[in-house]
Each structure stands twice: as structure tokens, then as C-alpha cells.
Length: 472
Image 1 (tube, rainbow, N blue to C red):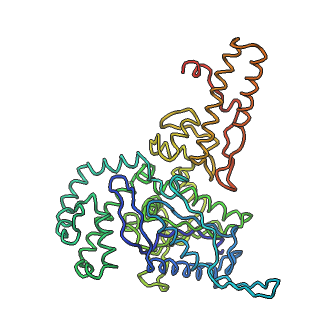
Image 2 (cartoon, one colour):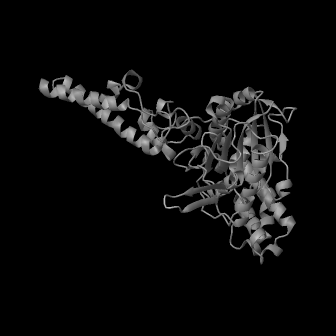
Image 3 (tube, helix red, strand yellow):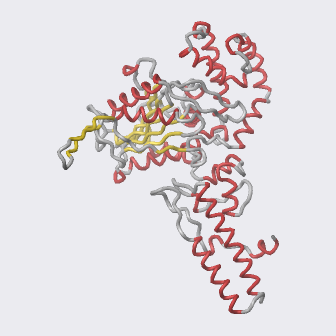
């Protein structure tokens, strides 16, 4: 038995100050620090030592040169600006050694390169895919969050937390000293304790620990739910498709994939650890900067989960600890088939499924999807254009939606012509136009290079009900 491949998830490294709205988590951009860059570079080097070099190196994964078919990488390009992207680039520079090559030109000049390798990194924006920020624009999740704020349970905890935060008012300034704002208050204290030589001495270890406790309470309540199907776990449900896809590709030796890397914020970690049945404090605590989780895919059809909470607890000497999945007694082995079977029911594989889960009618392409399949509102039908790894993007969906609208208009015109609205010659031309529009509807449209077909089907699969057209 050996490791066939790995899936690695990392949180970004140390960054500057950051703010996100407590009611909808809309965020402001910030910047990675040099410390954060070095933390992620260290992550890359440590994982290189585990899987690219040494006795446990993954067979078929080149240890020195990046090849696109062996490794794929994606990074969240959402609310925190370029912090996660910059962290991912640092990780990849640590994972691969500098690329050294010389080139002699025709005139005898020797050109050399001995610097970082260029590794393809797919950046995922919130309007492109729902994978890495599944909570963003999700009305169902936002409604659940604000209902929790108004609950008796939250009010009881606020009575305990608020006086603590108010006692730090001289440090917190005019920031709302409330439990609802707990994440922002902790993040401010944490950043200042690392980077502000003036405020750092005023922030005691006890105060920072207490602020972290309330931040953990707040974020666990926001991004986890005991009911695994609940929209409270949407941050994890949304990222399951690329994880399950990577598992499938690694286990299928013909694909060549050996390493899948996903750079994210702390939020999906909370939901995923909850979905995977990990114990406290993992499932109800915010992971530290530069934390990393590794899913090992074995050649004997088993897998193993390893996790390291940040790099500051020992640098390159800090070890990755194995954790048992779903309460299993064995932390070092779990059947891949069982993992996939348990996660598939919660995986939001299509835009339609995400829209339904969120009860969303407008955001992130849901309105276009409604126009595309004619259902309107939530309760979207699963259509071919939203199946597979590369679902229809809002831009492409808008184009297809416009084509569908033209087809409907053409059908109405054809119906009128068939009833004798114009002379026979003109009627024939109009019907030919309708046929042309329908043929366009059957054309495959790719949202990204190498993506699956997302064209709508013409004919009986997506026919127009004449009764609906007339009544409209």
C-alpha cells in the first residue's frame, strides 16, 4: 500500500487588518504580510518533504518540475482580496524547487533562469463558481444567521460576552463591543498583538484567549449545524464537488492527477470538519493562519485525513496529526467508497442545487438559471447546462438565456403564422428562422477552456408549452 495522491487544503497566512459584516459577511480586501508569505512557503516545503521527495514520495509525481496533468491548484479570489491567492503562490513556490535552465541564442548569448517555477493557479471568483465561498449571496444562510442572532440562546450568551468586550473598550476604540461582532473584535486584537508594538503590550494573553473563545462560538454557529443537510453547512457542502472530483481523478490512474491543492479561508474548514464528524475543538474552532489539511488517497482504496493547525507551533518540526473520520476507531485508514457515499448526499454539484439550498432567486446566476429553465424563483430543475464540474457561468447563462428568449418569441410568431397571419411564402421564412434558433440552442457552449458542454438541448427535452405562451 502506498499513497496514490493527495488533496491539500490550506488557510491563508498572516495578513493585515480585516473586516467582514457580521450580518452577511461581505468583506473588505486586505494584504498578506511577509510573515504570512513565509508561513505558506514553509507549508509548501513541509508537504514537499512528505510527498515529493524521500521514501514516501508519490509515484508518478515529478519532484522537481511542475506538470499540469499531475497537479491542479485553485484559490479563493473573493472577499479577502489577493490574500489567499498570494498565499497559494507562496505555497507552490515552497512545493517546487526553483527552475534552472539555460538557453543559448543564435548570437552566442547565454540566457539563464534559476528562479521560482510558474505553476498554473486557477483563481475562483464568487461570480464564477460557488465552490469556495458557498455562503456568499446565499439568502437561506443569511436568514439563518440573523435568526440565530435573534434567538434566546444567542441573547443569553451575549449577556456574558458583551461585558468582556466592553472592558476592552480602551483598546477596541469605537468598534461595536458585542457578541455579534465577536469575529471582528478578535481579529483586530489578534492582528494588533502580532504587528502593533504600541497596542501589543496592552493585549494580555488571557484577553486574547477569551476573545478567541467568543470568536470560535460565533463562527461555529455561523458555519456549522448539527443537521448536516442544513444550509448552515453550506460552506462545506459547496466545496465538496472539487474534493470528490479530485478523489475520483486520483483513484483513476489514467488521469495522471496526483496532487490537488485548494487555497481557502477558515470558513470551509469549519463546515467540512463538521461534515466529516471530527471531534471538538476541530469542528467548532477557527483554524489558525497557514493551517493545512491533507487527504491521502491510498492505492488500497483507503484514505487518511491529516491536519496541522498553523505553522507557528513548531515550523518544519510540527507534525501533521491523523484524525479519524465519522467517529471511526482507526485514524489511519478509511474506505474511500464509504467516504464518497457519505458525502455525496450533501454535495452541491450544480448551480441549481445551490440555488435550491439557499432559496436564492437572484444572486450568483440563480435569476439567469430561472429564466433558462423556466421554473422561476427557487425550486430549480436540474438541467444539462448546470451538470458537471464546469457549470454554466452567469455570463454564459445570460447568453443562453437570451437565445432561449428569442426561441420563445420565434415560437409565438410561428404559432400566429400557422393560423394564417401572413402569406404562405412569408410563413415559410419565419418557420425557417425558428428552426435556426432551435439549432443554436442545441450548440455546446463552454464556460471555460476544457470544460464540459453546457448547451441546452433543443427539441422535446426543452419544448415550449403553447398554452403557457398564449396565456402569457
